[in-house]
Length: 282
Image (cartoon, rainbow, N blue to C red):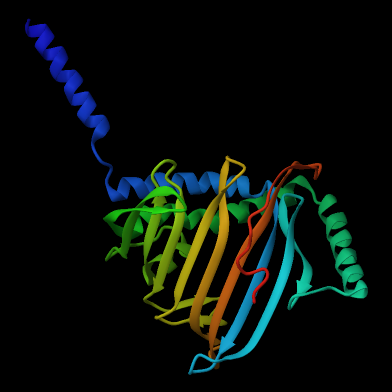
């Protein structure tokens, strides 16, 4: 009888342990692991990238607008962008020939790269993304509620910079300058959406470009070919300063579509068309 009671107690505790809700921190840790896998699979895909950049005056009126549609190919395991359209118009025959010549030249160059050069580029690629592993240590996470996005149940989690955070990777220093809200898929721990507020100055290129507090960044991801989550859309609104001199208000939208999976021999295996809300603006 005593043995039966103990077995029942152990079984009850095990069931409760399985049903215990995960903490916000544990959910984010799992999502970072999934992000690492997505990053590895990203290089197996080619896609279209639509960029629309606007400059605005102090009143919010658009003073300049540029749109470009690129095809991003994988050459030698690294992305290469080829322009397809500018400002809604296909390239002229002359421009298209020039783009093709540039592509052929780069493909030939990468085909001659040594294994050492390829390993170097791969190391640099991994280092650029390594700072994301420090996200769980850089923030304090708070569970807000549960919502639904595109039919997917998600956790909504607030991320605030953790005082005293000391990054191990220099690129992770920018994590101290932002806070955000994350929407994470409950089934696969994937980042469905993130809204980020810049609360400290972010600099790129030895202070060539500076983004002060007040900027907002949002991005969304989507599942492709039932195997990987890849970018869907990015939006940036910021008052930026170029070369410490010129200040301008920037509005940038990036939309990703037409994901296609390639093998090393560049054969298309699968195609998933993701409609772009920006590709045909009214």
